[in-house]
Image (cartoon, rainbow, N blue to C red; front, side, top):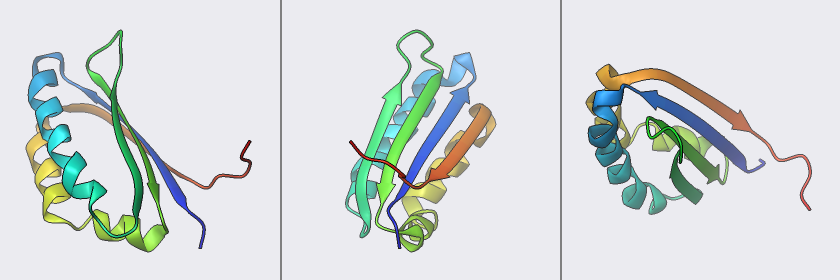
Length: 98
């Protein structure tokens, strides 16, 4: 199986930026320790702090699916559900490198 790259974009309510950011940061360390996680980066837009982007690389689809069942991921979903305005997730495969 090929490496799965995930680009996830979250747009949150302006009054929830700091609380959502806190919840997102809680995901980073435990996720990076998961089997199959190659890379897991969290970004915040420089001009619009309500926009967050995850850039992730997983060994395979099974690794990503296991991640979605972890307690830390489920806790994040519960904690931020009412604060999200938009969530867009792209699962991709690299077709050219360098």
